[in-house]
Length: 248
Image (cartoon, rainbow, N blue to C red; front, side, top):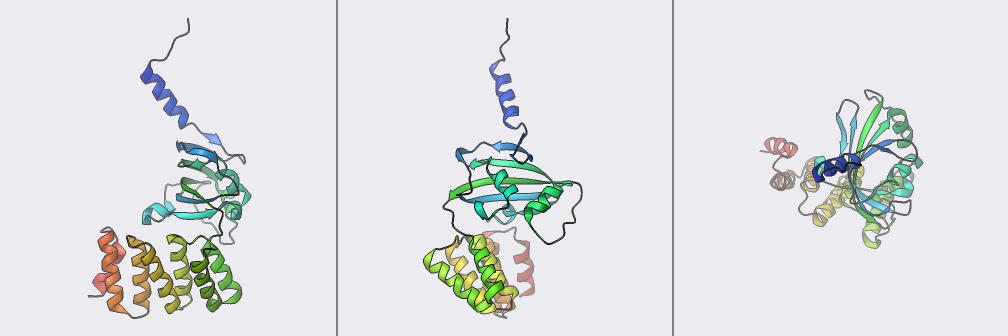
């Protein structure tokens, strides 16, 4: 006679099955931490995610969770390997990928050297929203900055604000602000980062970035005010605390 599992044992077995490792079409091992809903993702999607990348020793290399600001990706702009990884995901799902280091280097398509321990990285991805497939505004502005210069890039940013022709979330605007800040274009950086605080008035990171731009432009009272706002929104913001002690 075939034995049946009691309900509790069955629940435990199903839980372990849910966490069992699977593989992406290109062979990367992954676990489904939380099952998503609806259709699997495709190259026709834009997606908003929280993600975290760790090396083989568990050191966190990149984390949107740390600053509480999600990241946008246009699927069609990703390398084929990442597109295949994203294809196993669904909206609302959370996944953990174990990626061979050499595969990760190739998928990133970066000319910068990777000096990481071990032979793999661990990438966690939570799919928050599936969105229309708009270009990433930070990528668009970065390309204009590279090919046409800072003035044209700033005009392009303002045009995107007006017409919505690219995805312009908090993370993307913050990147754009730093593009100009790193070019020494303080007025443009402040304008972009001011826009971010207006769009995201509860973001400690947005106010911290604007404070930095004010500080670098020697507008110290405004910098102090923004750091105070950032610290109020996030009492764990040690950078804001350190800068306020400097601005006393």
